[in-house]
Length: 420
Image (cartoon, rainbow, N blue to C red):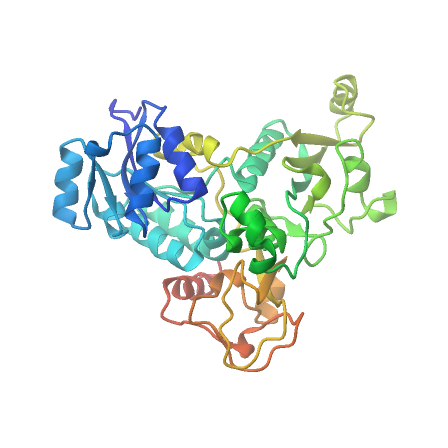
């Protein structure tokens, strides 16, 4: 419940696998109510609500503000294709973006914050690209802009917060890689598997080609100030038994050039982990006594993440406690930049995350600025190659025409000018 005893009233945008499961989960919680579901397909939204136990005669479709206001006042649930209702309707306390579409997510987040509503984002693709400026806007508006606990970045952040709270030093922050890594994966190759998992081929492609992993680690970088140790990370296969030895410095027999880094490993999926240390002898003795090994480095491991199932915890903390689960408080530390999957001809559209044309790799924001590289989250349907781009090229801004009018582009320009 909120401080005044009322339930938290939510608008959910996007009714795919994450949005639909979140609606079902929230139906079991007295403290939160889904009052509006926005999707391009209203029948999909209605189905998600009825599967969550809401009677269809309690669901009303409308794209009109005044009608939507009356629907909510009378205790009904609204379904709409008009995303503007999510931030305009006075009864809504917080908006949850489950779209995974960075250009659209930027529009939703900016307007939600301007209307002084909390913004809970499953849209890590948007957050990794323009999160710092949105976080700055939210602070000034007195609301929370946050990623969710159930995604790997939020789950990593939970471990990091606990470690810092214990006075431990964090050396590595990392996640498991749930799918095989193939940078050149295509929608057509993955269509059957995507259908079996009830995912869009485009979403599964973003997982398999590594872009999603890079973007999630990008979010962690911006939250804790870490960088990838090498372009795109090491991504070695390891296990809970070996990971501390593997993620040591090279001089100590490991793979790392330095600490304060993010990385990933297929062998640690579906969990997240951090490597910590302490220079206190008593702490090291205690860690050994507790079964964490001889040190000086130790593994803290969360062998799962529960996606939308954990999102209500983030929603409560944002709306009631005014606390984000994960926020880009260090600014744009890293960037997920764009690599050509195949030869791209002058005049072709780039298509973006999860497409057959490009994938993303993680690097420092400093390098991205110096080389004027294209963050993959900035690609919109209007992004076009203005020269021939060979396969495996790291694409820079001189090679493309981007949509300067898009909200995400304008936010990124503002973010860069503010040096966030």
